[in-house]
Image 1 (spheres, rainbow, N blue to C red):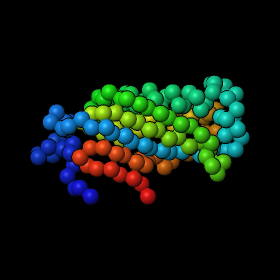
Image 2 (cartoon, one colour):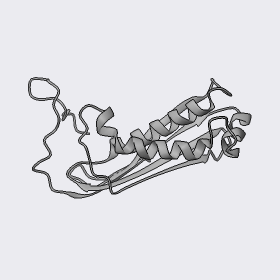
Image 3 (cartoon, rainbow, N blue to C red):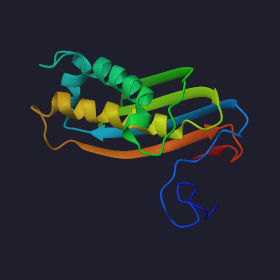
Image 4 (cartoon, rainbow, N blue to C red):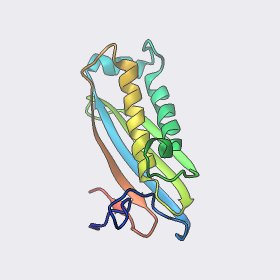
Length: 159
């Protein structure tokens, strides 16, 4: 594990990493997270009959939009031209809530981990917003990077 923090200069001041000399390569990141809720709230989400509309579809769109705007939200992120953003919102296998998975791709000098994590986070927050009238006790958890490929730092796969 590398101990050097790339967003700090030699004097400890914040900086945006200079990627101008890095080679453009194909990069991909996959992230996931979930939101736990009461069974009746899950039924409402899956039915598409919520007061604010089709929860899962709106969350999917919100996640895609968020990935595209990550550099506006995270101060040291580079604005990237994304080639693909896919967000899936599905009922959890154990019936405890909804699972969100985001897969983001680009060809460029820096990775897309933050875009994938942002997509998941905003999709989950959107679910909460759309269902909070029915269940304020929902819990967002386990937002995590599952996989990344490409770039000088190599591949990563959560085990």
